Image 1 (spheres, one colour):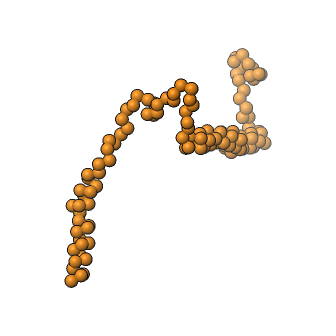
Image 2 (spheres, rainbow, N blue to C red; image 1 turned 180 degrees about the horizontal axis):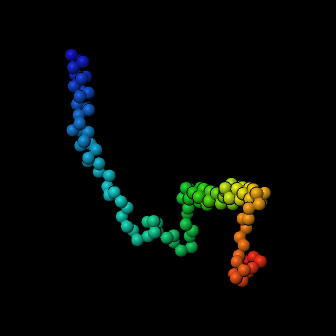
Image 3 (tube, rainbow, N blue to C red; image 1 turned 120 degrees about the vertical axis):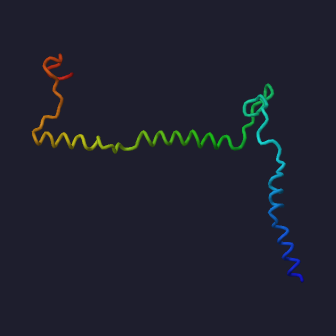
Length: 117
């Protein structure tokens, strides 16, 4: 007999109707912050007092701006690994060895017959 009572109690507690009602009623108030007329809802401090920063603000500033500075330094000093850096000198050397003219020569009528200074 105790097995049947336990089984009924389990069935009642997992009833889908009760679960739906429990989640649908919610009752958590408005889903947005009411407009207050202040930037980020924060009132300005009274005259003569300083604004107190929240605990998360300084780590956020250090992380964002410090990370941007480190990224800028890394990008500035990173080695140049483009194809043009190593391929152009090699191509010039091979063309010179083969006797092929690869440098630009302006026409005599261009105003710069000996090349652009």
